[in-house]
Length: 165
Image 1 (tube, helix red, strand yellow):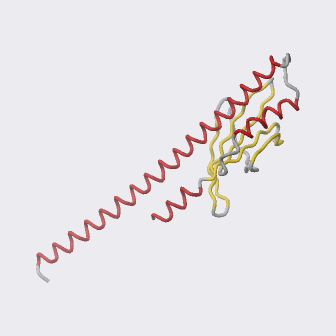
Image 2 (tube, rainbow, N blue to C red):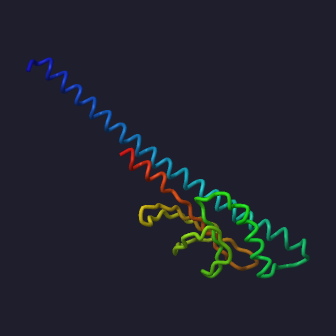
């Protein structure tokens, strides 16, 4: 084999290796950015639902001439917020008090999470071949703490990542 052929084949091999490494790094970066985007979206949705619940409770108190809503009225307020969120089939939501589910849609996975007041905790879990992003936050209503759990199915991101690698 002549020298120019060896140089040509070596150059082609190096270019192919560089292209493979670049595509792997781009794919990994895309996967990471997709997860961050889903996480930001889940946190925003959790904040939106928490604020919506607080607003409904604050609005209903004066309209009924009450200082505090009854347990049944709170459940009704929770349900009205959750009903407005039912369009997203990849999302599950639950509202808990003392680890007891008060209201939910799509039966979310509820796991133990360390939630600090006024913060949202985020966790990714795997269940068989499915991946879920769980967000949880505490809201304070009438001196009682309620937890808003949201479970989002993010399996599509991991499936796409596995197909591309």
